[in-house]
Length: 119
Image (cartoon, rainbow, N blue to C red):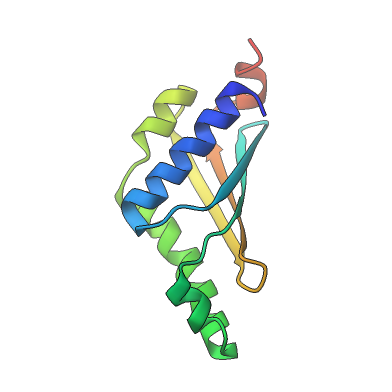
C-alpha cells in the first residue's frame, strides 16, 4: 500500500468513527482507475454482533449497514478524502458480509486515481 492508499484508509476509518461511533479495525485500500477500493475488517460493534446471532438480525444489519453508510456520505461530504485525492467523490458502492464481519466500499471519483497518484 502506497502513502496515498494508507492515508485514504486512515481517512475512511476516521470518517466512519466520527459519523458511526466506530471505524473498521483494519482497512486496505487499492486504487484502480477512478476507484478507491476499501476492504474492511472488524466493522461490527458488540451490539451488532449480538443482533447478528439471529437470521433476521443478519438481514436487517446488512441492509442497514449498506444503506446507512451510503446515506452518511451523501449527508456529510468526505472533504478530506476529496482534498487528498484532488478529485470529487462521484458515487459509492457498499456491501458487508455480516458473518465474516468483512465489508467492501468502492469510492468512485471523477479522475483516474491510479494514473494520477503514480506521478
